[in-house]
Length: 303
Image (cartoon, rainbow, N blue to C red; front, side, top):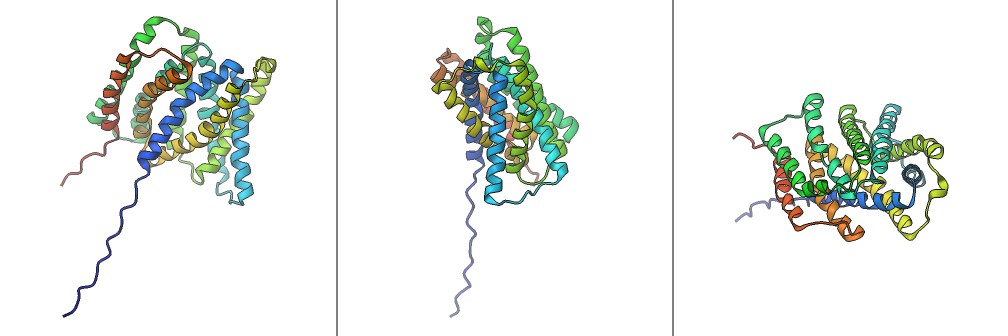
């Protein structure tokens, strides 16, 4: 009696995407709190110029020490440099200027509108389909975010000046997201992130030295801790995860996770900065979570 040949069943690989998304959301949302701490003790342009320059040097320096190949064409390097100006220098330069006169929670709220504008532009320029399901999910995300901060806006503690700068910051990251998908740079995201940071540092440094007062820096443990997080957790790890999500999820789906930033940002702001949060704010998480599910859920396949 012969035995039937054994059939090897391939093991399913562990899906790292949920962990990637979770880590990205935690890092990105906490960055608003770290940024608020940073601009309290240091002029924002000086803080950002130092942050980007150090992050770029660390990334590219590590690449050289490890002996990794360049693996980027000059075209792709130029694209990453342009993205660094949009996603780093403009987005955070404008956003940190706004953080001087708005709360970390409101700053996170405004930037969380990113998915709505990104989805509209992605449908227009990238050919990403805009279905009723996606549109409904985006609408639910907007409703949830509005519920979370509705009463915060009525308090009137945030200045119009800061809100305008934060809105301009939002426009910059939306443009950078669309440019990344439209130009589709190839090669190492690690090296590309280093180029982005270094390009942003080079652009911001002369502006910071011209318009900011270096003597206004208040060297405190809080500033040192915030700066370390912004360099390592923000500029290096969070941006690497962000561009990875853009590649694997698409502009619309990846941007939808920004709807999670207001509740997470408010939680961190409450725990670290003592910013006021009411229990009713948390009810907005329900439509936010449902909206993200609708936007990111794969379309049903016809049998």
